[in-house]
Length: 200
Image (cartoon, rainbow, N blue to C red):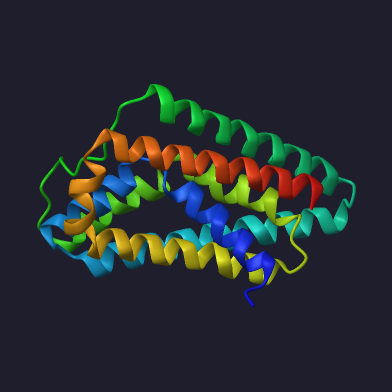
């Protein structure tokens, strides 16, 4: 049986990474062109692993020194997840969007990795998701190592699936309706995670 903390970390990371953004669009584009797919997916996965680990470890060190901070972290994380979930549900009803793989054509590995670096490390949302949100949610895990491994596993699986499955996935996710359904599923999962964090 898969440990609950592993599942929680996996589900949280997978839900966060599904959000439409420049990094996912870039990985999809590289997959469609079949250019440096392995290197790009590996770079994104390693970057996420470093940020997730720093988020969990950082909050772990802080809460060890200030135990009362755990309660505030749980409250903050639960509220954030709830709002995030409600926004996703709202978007599933009101928005019409699709993930497109258009943009600048890149041929060299160096330029591809530089662009990937910008999409990953210069995106302010990545720090909110990994260092802050994942760090806060991890305070509710009994086994933070399993939580971290679960979160990193989801990131690795997603990027390689997106990169190598791009030719299969792009027709589906070019349709706004597919993203509406995805937003609804993500919203429900986020609300569940908020409940689990606060009452678990």
